[in-house]
Length: 549
Image 1 (cartoon, rainbow, N blue to C red):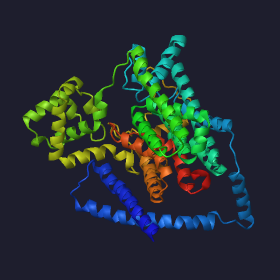
Image 2 (cartoon, rainbow, N blue to C red):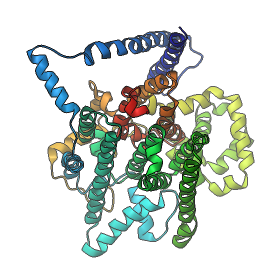
Image 3 (cartoon, rainbow, N blue to C red):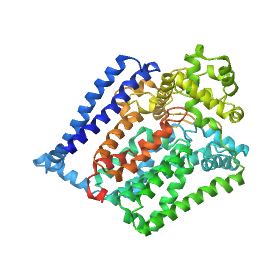
Image 4 (cartoon, rainbow, N blue to C red):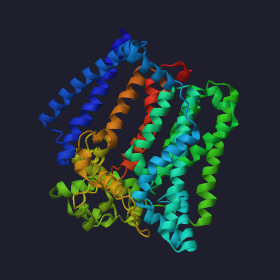
């Protein structure tokens, strides 16, 4: 009885979260605001929560019965025997590592040829100019800046063509990414997961349009998420097979390497890795003294490497610190929204103080779904001299306009968590979506070798109608994957399987840090796509001894 009540409670929490994502997401996506004083919103939210509560609870109660009765039950009959033999053959399937890599590269090749030498977009131009001008800043990960900019500049000096360097980077990234995915598939063998899971993972990595597009994109997020996926696998191994984790020096070394790259290939990776590592240390407090010493040594090595990287290495390259405005995207947007919609309530002294750090022309350029246009004029020196004054102004406005602040945060992040959202934060003047930046920016030159695939990927990247069509959201929407994550995460919590909850924090912490960013873009939450097969395996195989022993 106690377990049933617990399941009812957690199903209710799940229903509330999903209902808010759907109902609030609809209003925000449609009107760029949510009236939190509206009775209409609350009765829809309440009704949705009840329906989803019943659906989630009923599904979880019925799923184990269905699994035992129909999935685990031996099949009979001529056709069923044939299907059973096929399933049995797939259960024992073991995919060769090299084959997995080769198949993925072959499936991603049309994406590369559709926009050769690769999608050189997002921050790629800025990273290249840092290397070209010899002025490296920590705004972007320095390792990625050196890799991308170094290849582009290096091959230009050898061949006179920027496209060669971009193409080399694209192919190198495809090789690294396919190997990361192959390692993820190979990792499933450690838990003796069936060949069906491995085959599903391979098909997903090959066929997902999101993975196809980002495999040839020069943004820093791709290599960061590849390292993060490997970091996730090692955390799972630590929590599920601790003895094996500590028994091999190669695994400890691999954990250290993947953790270091998670910390250095994106700024938010530092916080994600540190929190997970603290959880691992806490989990080891009652373990063998040998385990605690080994883990402490590995963490000391990671911190030492990170200190050398951000200390002497930065000094040698004369790396300049990044701007503080990136960390202030949320408050900047909140104050800009108050300026836009509650201007008449603001005093002259308040406006004078605001204009000193955010020029009026930038405030006038406010868009609810992206902070870039406002923070572009951010005066860092003025802010640094008057930090407390601006903090006090932000807090005072928040107390006077709490609903405006809440709306600012929600509308700026809605594309992350509303399953039916179209990623169009930049609100292009021509109505193009900003789902994926499908282009070759300077200094590259776009070459279309496969026109049919070019039209296909361009439609996915920019056409809102295509993204809203049919079941497209199942393949493209981060909000859809987040909804599944909430269902799985809360169910595992309900069952008190805490050893699986910490690995799932990798997904959750990535989302939470992305919510503080300037805009909702798919590339910020790629782990939900890269780690989807792992998430499914954790959930559906959570009670099997191979996974939890």
